[in-house]
Amino acid sequence: MPDKLITPHGEIALPAFFPDATYGTVRATGMAAVESTGTPGMVMNTYHLYNRPGARLIKSLGGLHRFTGWDKAILTDSGGFQLFSLIRENPAYGEIRRNEIVFRPERGSEKMTFTPEKCVQSQLQFGSDIMMALDVCTHPDDPMDVQRQSVDATIRWGARCREEYDRQTRRMDKKPLLFGIVQGGADAELRMKCGQELEQIGFDGYGFGGWPLDGDGNMRYDILKAAADAMPDTKVKYAMGLGRPEEIVKLVDMGYTLFDCVIPTREARHQRLYAFKPGMDNAQGVHADSFYNFVYILDDKHCRDDRPVDESCDCELCRRYPRAYLHHLFKVGDSQAYELATTHNLRFYARLMEFLRK
Image (cartoon, rainbow, N blue to C red):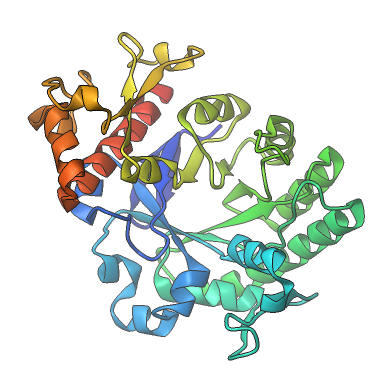
């Protein structure tokens, strides 16, 4: 299992967590604050940035790093999952064809066409450090014929992405990394087929593709394990869109070493902050069944609380302010509350990664 990932914007120790900056920003905070947490990279979304403000504009302004002011690693998701989700919710928005995805954001207005080639071209225009191949996503409950079609299309599109990547980067000195995505739904054999054929094409890393939850919202660890087993152990295994702290610990044991998720920043905006339980802020502690608590900062009991959110944390919030102050900021609706809470939760995740690397 690799213990580091080398990108054009630096070396990343693994395991690592990237917050989601879908539109080029981590909501409620700035790039300097994110960098202060020890976060080594972030995830931005090709579909959304291709749609607004556009790949050409971003390239003309020096790429995503210059455009956003982030000088560490940037991973761009292909946008395939977003398109899949929108089309699944309402088929009138578009369709997934054999060679492309056609999407009509305004139900019949200007048509957008996503191809594997365009996906790669856009991510190169962005100046991404880690690019994701365009795949065809499914839900675990989809019938087997849909799962097979998804795997076949993901392999075909992966080969087209690889071919376009090789053509576009042959004269580049510092090349971005290109990751493939392993599909196959809940079927272990399909996952293995997809992983093996993508390995034959050749990628720098491999991501879990699809929906990891069952109909009741429970995590399907069996699916995640099948996907991990289908990926080569010599390459980075990326658990896309996952997850909660306790989920990440389990997934590291499966071999995954790269993660992204909206959860820590979303929890912060909803006044829920992570705090390690006493004695659990270490490599052994995070493997306990329960190693952290939520601090619900708007609870009345915190209005006079002079303790930091987490005694063991070294983020700005915990170093400088008592819980009562953050409680007050949220009560009066001050924007600093959201930045301090978001920075704290990202620092919690960065520290969790540090403990998992030991």
